[in-house]
Amino acid sequence: MIRPFDSLMLRTTLAPLVAAVQLVAVYLLLHGHYSPGGGFVAGVLFAASFILPRLTFGQPQGWLALTPQRAALMAVAGIIIFAGIGVAPMFVGETMLDYAVLPLAEKAEYRRSLGILLIEVGVTMAVAGAMLSIFYALSGPVGGEK
Amino acid sequence: MILYAAEIVSLLMAVSALAIVWARDMFSVVALMAVYSGFMAVVLALMGAPDVAFMEAVVGPSLSTVFLLGLMWWINPEEATRYPAARRLLALLPALGLGGIVLYGVNGLPPFGEPTAAPMEHVSPYYIEHAMADMATPNVVAAILADYRSLDTLIEAAVVVTGVLACLLIMMYRDDQTV
Image 1 (tube, helix red, strand yellow):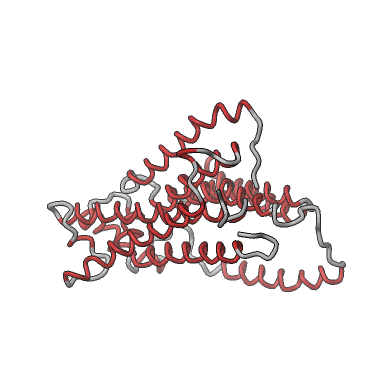
Image 2 (cartoon, chains in turn red, purple; image 1 turned 180 degrees about the vertical axis):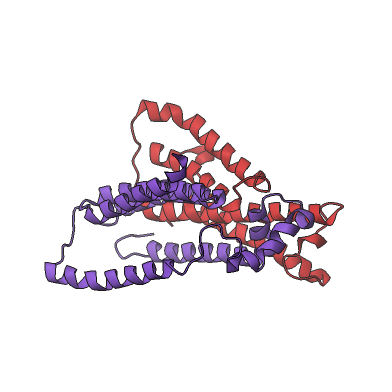
C-alpha cells in the first residue's frame, strides 16, 4: 500500500497542479479537432491527475477518492459509449460509426464533428479508467478497498 | 543548429539505451527508460508528428514510470540475476542478427518526407483533401482516427480495456492476498 509522502512543498503545490493537469486534459479533449491531442492523451492525463494525489496522500478522501471499482466501471462505460454511438446508425439502416445520421446539428460535417467529440469522450473515459485500474492493481489490494 | 537537432537527440537516445543495458540497479533502469522515452518524444516532435509526440511524452516518462515503480512492490529490486558469460555471448548472436536484419531493412525505406513513397500515394491524399469538407475538422489526425478509421479506434480502445480487465482478474486473485 502507498503511505502518505510527508512533504509540505508537495502538499501545497498539489492542488493547483492537479487542477492544471485536469484543465489541460479537458483542453486536449475539446480542442483535439484543431490541435494535437485527442481522447487517448486526455485520458492518460486525467488518470495522472488522480494518481498524483494518490501518491502524495496515500488514501485520498472525498471527491478525489475515485475507487478501483469506479475506475473499472468508468473504463467499461467509455467503451459502451463508443460502441453505442457506433452501433446507433445501424438501427436506421446506415453503416456502423456513421455519425452523420446522429441528430446533433444541421449540416452533415458538423454532425460528424460532434460525433468525433462524443466518441473521444468515450475513449477518454476508457483510457483513464484503464490506466487508473492498472495503477490500483499495482499499488494495493484491488477488490477489498474500503 | 536546428538542422542537426534530430540527429543529436537520436544520439542521446542511443546513449540512454546503452545506459539501460549497462545499468545494474533496477531503479536506474526505470529512470533511464523515462529519459529514453523523453528523447523519443522530442524526436517524434522534430519529425512533425505532434500527436504521437504528445502520447509518447505523456505515457513514456510519466505514467509508465509510475507503473514500473509500482511494480517494485511486487518484486525484490535488489535481486538481480547475472547469467554466466558463455550464456550472455550466446544471447548476443540472435540479438546482433535481429539488429542486422532491422538495419538492412532501413535501407529499403523511402527517404523521410518523400512525396512519392507508397504510403503517401494510397489513401492519405483522399483523407487530407476531404477531412475539412467531410467533418469540419482541421486536425487530419483526429479526423482519420475518429471517423475514417473509427472502427480501428473502437477495437483499439476495447483491446486496452480488455487487457486491463484481464490484468485486474489475474492480480486480484493471488494466493497470498485476501480480496
